[in-house]
Length: 187
Image (cartoon, rainbow, N blue to C red; front, side, top):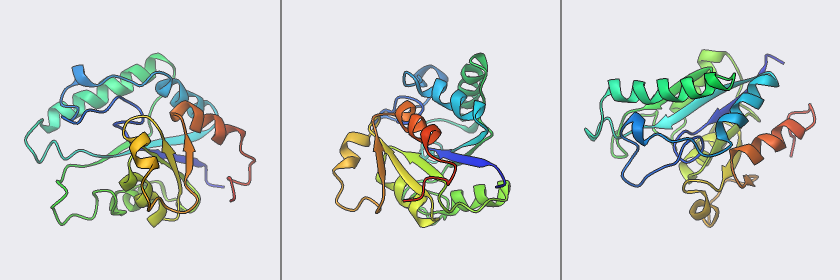
């Protein structure tokens, strides 16, 4: 195996989300237990990658420098706990753009597969919204819904991808992944 990989959404999974968008480092606040969960993944040999839609850039709510400062804050907070993210991929486009990178389209996940030279079949894709799960399913990943962020509402969606696993939060999802047998969680 070329190494274990987990793909995480950001807002609503790692940090608290807002209907008004997370627009500054000051508004970026980790969900309790999420950073520690990422540290545990790293300690167990996982590569941890974030795939996040950030349409606030195209909407003019914040600029690239501000997005970078939010990500520096996230990486710094992880570093203080002995962890880190292996990469952060983002889509800056709005929902009405014709890009292929905005989830639920799988373009961003295809870029991750190419960058890390991995097959995403069975790879955990953890998110709080239907589009996160749909993007994960589109590349053959294992969709995992967390009930933080928009997760409670998402759980009631009629078209959740088949085989979606549901956990209270990122820490509980990581508990499951770390207990799963080495057969990479076959259904």
